[in-house]
Image 1: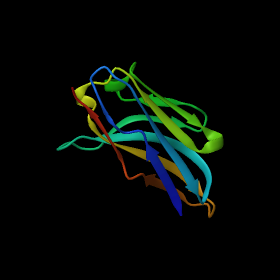
Image 2: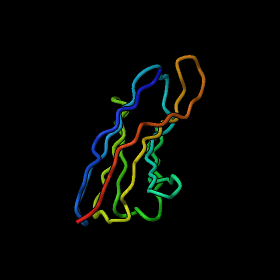
Image 3: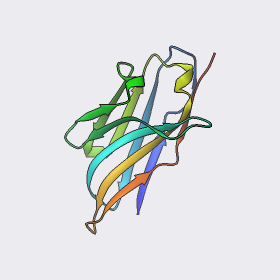
Image 4: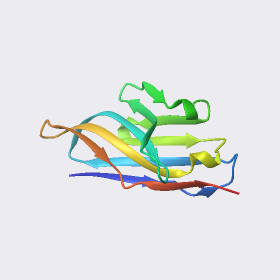
Length: 120
């Protein structure tokens, strides 16, 4: 069993900032990568940013220079610092965990999502 606890979603004005957090716990032997995806109404889920256990990051072009993903390996927690938010960033943000379980199986696991709304 694995749990992902997401937090930080909120209503914010354009130009504002938010920080999302996602903490993983449970039967995790090792983590390959963690990341954030988002899904706006009527659209498909899309990549926002990912980070590997070694710290390699990947960003969607639409968020480069505005969002920063980071990770605390000791706490199995990933963060997404979002600055200069735009209305088009409005979406449900989902945490993703790609890990190896204590039974040596690899899994791709999703959080429940946290709502980010950018509006004046």
